[in-house]
Length: 187
Image 1 (tube, rainbow, N blue to C red):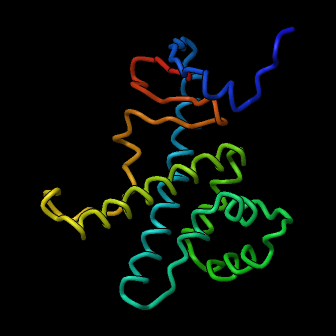
Image 2: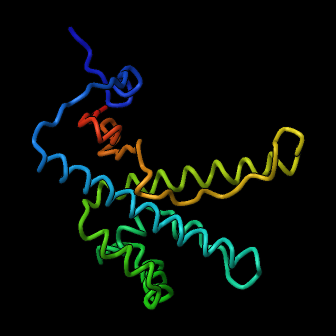
């Protein structure tokens, strides 16, 4: 009798591959480009918010809210007004940033996008900041390994964006690569 594989075993055995899709329809190409740039814009705004909070924390004027601003569940609940068990943290985020222009823009951008995809974008931002904090710790222990002090992640200009991937779920993503050639890739 054949044994069924669990999801965990399948994910360990699954190899991600890339294939290209040529888009001949200009309208579809523009829509896809706009969608991908909107995801990147969301990521940029979130990076700016976290950097602002981090700079205030370094100056001693605010508490570090890294866990609140990089929690995909909290942010999606706050942006989409979902009811959840995290209502205290969600209400705190809403009240703290209710007059913040970037937060309002983040909310408006989130309305244009799918919540499960935003979840993956927030996880990516969290991972980049964790890598920064790890590099900072390594730098403090052994500065000779680095050319200079590590810098926190910064937002990228949308006009100079050539490679960008939006993860759709755990095993699938949509990549923006060389849009001028009309090629899109999907993992």
